[in-house]
Image 1: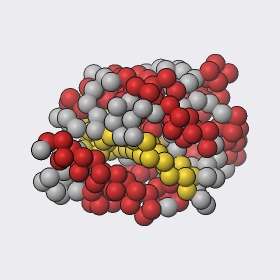
Image 2 (image 1 turned 30 degrees about the horizontal axis):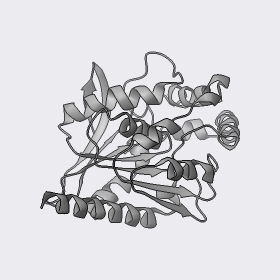
Image 3 (image 1 turned 120 degrees about the horizontal axis):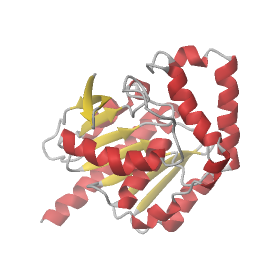
Image 4 (image 1 turned 180 degrees about the vertical axis):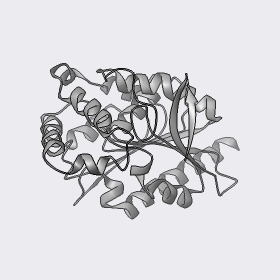
Length: 263
């Protein structure tokens, strides 16, 4: 593990070198609302190996072993990550052709980044994205609060976060705040100009099919959707090989299309 400093804030990160010379993209893994570098486990390395791409995995501020946040989350926390942190991170790391691989909050951040057109992007992989708040989402996040208070979840989180309370309550409090029910990023989807791959479990406890259906309806760029049976909120956990294969095929099509355009 290494760290990179953005505006004086140290962010935990891991880099994986490319294994194929003809693949210019860097896969940038954007974790879920309770994620970190370590919580991705072996998945980024498996996808990097399958695609030949370089990869960057990092923990957002307040997660993993990155610096703690200076103030609580507010409703714009994903917007700030997308339009402020990511462009500076890519510039600092010399990443000129990122393909964003986001899960849950990370997928929403990817949508905002690409829809804002605030920096380079070659494609989006969106696993269990949210573009608006649903009752099912709030109910499951409320249940997560109960689980955190009554089980060993805090102890398990301590393996992956410097301060598990800081990480958990930052996410949980903002999603359960009444004002957050108005959060909506659907307007960013039509502005996205690069291909998208959307993967969601049909048994996702944090979102319904209405999420990927909204993206399909609003997308102006090519949008490939896979709804997986027997899969909850984390396709890369419940069906790692199938998810890896979908991403590898998507990257291969992006690479082939770029090669044709270069002729």
